[in-house]
Amino acid sequence: MNKAIEEYYKLPKNYFTFTTSTPSKANNDFFYLNEILCFGKAGNHKCYSEVSADHTITLPDNLNDVINNLRLEKYAENKNMDFHNNFLTDLYYNTRPYIPNILRHQLQKFSMRNWDKITFPNFPVDTTVENIFESIIIEFLKIHQNEKVPFIWFWPEGKKGCLLMTHDVEEEAGLLFCNELMDIDNGYNIRASFQLVPEKRYKLTDEHIDNFYKRGFEPLLHGLNHDGRLFKTKEIFTERLKKIHQYAKRWNISGFRSPIMYRNLNWYNLFEFKYDLSVPNNANIEPQKGGCCTVMPYKIFDLLEIPLTTMQDHPLYYYMNDFTINLWKRQSELILQKYGLLSFGVHPDYTIPANAKENYKRLLSYLAELKETRNLWNAKPAEIHSWWTARDNMELTNNNGSWEIKGDASGKARIAYMKLEGSKLVFELEDKKVKVINNLPAQEV
Image (cartoon, rainbow, N blue to C red; front, side, top):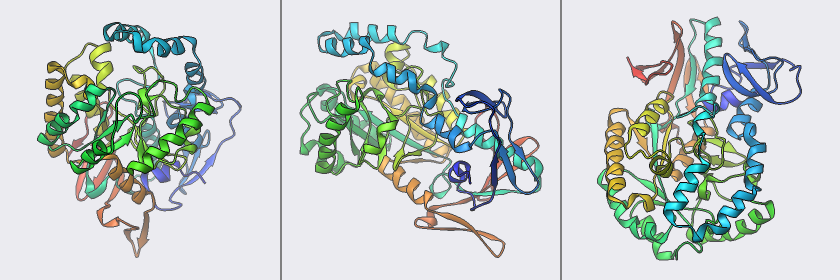
């Protein structure tokens, strides 16, 4: 039984029956499913799902594998292994402490050249995972036109999306700026997390950690010493992870983000954290390429991955020389078209200059307005983990013709329905209908 689509929507058990056709080609490669570019095993480059009248859906490959190939960046795995063992990467980090900031930014910008030539994942937001699931539902509803597909809505209390603000603290200047940054966030009623480096970069104390908790923010760990070598070899990773876990226990921290968004998802089973924030939606303008191609949280082993779905401030400011919020607004609209997670990465270190600080305030003003007008849930990582875990354990059951949600926190959950209106997929939630229109923002009708 294929579970990927059932777990994503939290459909009633066995609502669909899945079968898979036998691929004629053994190796993974890019192929098309319902005209959506995917990565997996397929017999040709124009593969379509098939749906029968008895709710049986036939796919060209196991859907779990196709989705995991995207979420777990299998399509970029070989390139990323080479990246961590690259001579130039080693040279850069060996000499980085002696390179002036201006020159360092120029070197980084040079290394990001030709990012706009990358054709997959899609920039500025990749929703391939969502597009695959929606295309299968649409194929089903074409056969069952008078039927509505019930599911458990993505966010608590019918919220139309989730807003997460995160701050990676890189240097001592950034740490010293954190109190002012918390004041700025509080001024717009935005709650956030702060990712902190426990060794070498600055002296992180129990008092610092307590201050974040007391002010209503969430501290997470940000690697061990931010030297770019955490994922260089499994031996280095395993050894450093022991100390990282010790700091996590000392400060009661449950979440992690890797410095520079470096990652090797094959090793994530070694983490003792509950959730991670290290995987970008698309990493086209990041040192390590790839991306999870989704705007929703998902599981890696027993860890909940809460992906970064928008551009970080550092590449926006220093690679693209853009001190506006135009790209962030464009990304926000694309993500909310899928009712997804709006997660932002804004560094205290890069927000200190006056122009960056003013731009961040413009972003917060926009997000505060968006939170109200689009009914968004502003949550911290621990709250997202708590909700997503509770939703994952809920069941949608039919009781004498009525659908009911069973499970902890079900009082915050909402039942929603998917149906077709013409060729458009429509979501119904609490007597409101929301149309999903390709390449346009979500529209309530």
